[in-house]
Image (cartoon, rainbow, N blue to C red; front, side):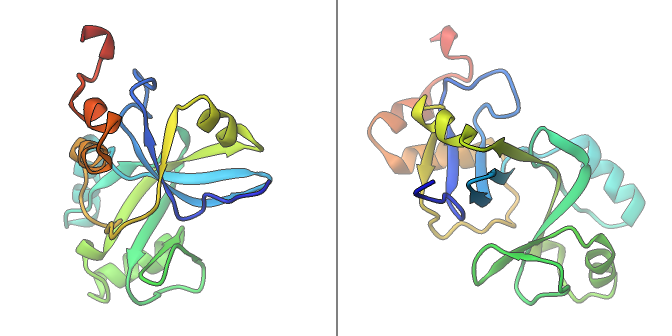
Length: 182
């Protein structure tokens, strides 16, 4: 493996349709010779978000991180580290699965819900699988550019990034979700 996509954004191309990756924006958290690990930033789960509100008593939006291990919960946090169990994404953001520390910090007012994003499951690729999907043009790699990973995002994020890329991506941004309907 000559290159790591860690810290990059994957934008699904219109060739991916009909599944969770359709119009997805994926942050690659880790990528090495064994594979890649990432989280989908723009697939909000309204049903689970409502359940979290009932459990916690305050609103927390839950996002589908990907199709793998939906029982696992991940948090992207902004700012000061509240746990020693984390993966640094960059100087401003980090990832943790330490649910006890996160919930405790939220209840104690140490972190705001605006500085956290909750994910169920993750997106994973085996050795060289992501590279193969990139060769088949299923994804476009985008260098990270001032993206706040904790902002509430929806399908508008995919379209906005596509529009900012310009050229043929502008066509994709304006294409119908089912490209066969075009």
